[in-house]
Length: 89
Image (cartoon, rainbow, N blue to C red):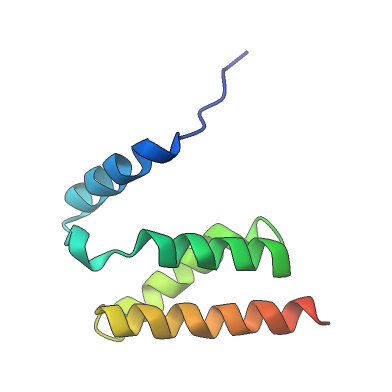
């Protein structure tokens, strides 16, 4: 039986640093709270499995729009609004 692989909160920054370095992404361009808020809103408004999928989609959209902080905020805002609408269905 495998033990839980839950990442402690204090290790999240180290993981983000390593993941960004591996993919050649400027770590300063990543807003962890923005991504986590999106995941929370989608998980509660739609379904848990939709959270990582939505984060990936937001990243694709932000990248296609230039990848800057504003593009990230716009992509997250659009999906957060959709999740809120979805929850009201």
